[in-house]
Length: 141
Image (cartoon, rainbow, N blue to C red):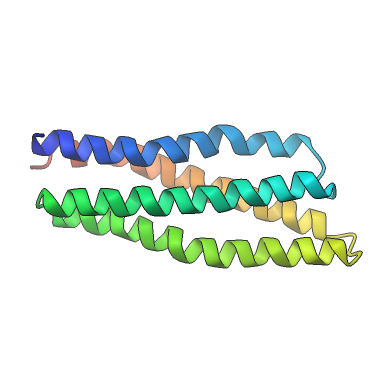
């Protein structure tokens, strides 16, 4: 692969899980999160998203390092670190709200909804940054 092709391939690898999450997560805005199976499905979607992003970003970082693109590898590596750290942080808060809901806290579904919105917003901001960076990473050799 040429250097440009490696960079574009890494961006595509990262775009797939982010794009899927962007399309799938708004569906949960149409349902109530006080319904246990719905809330568990939301939790599973976030958990899977963080795990897939971790793997995709680590693969992307390795590919960019092997291609000699240290700065790009650092940026994608930061995305991997964010996915690793963010999963632990985010899932702990989701689990706290699920336990609170199960204990009878009437506001827990609202806090879970705020977490849902914040997760969608964070993904959207990262997706926009990734899309904006494609022209720069694809042309820098």
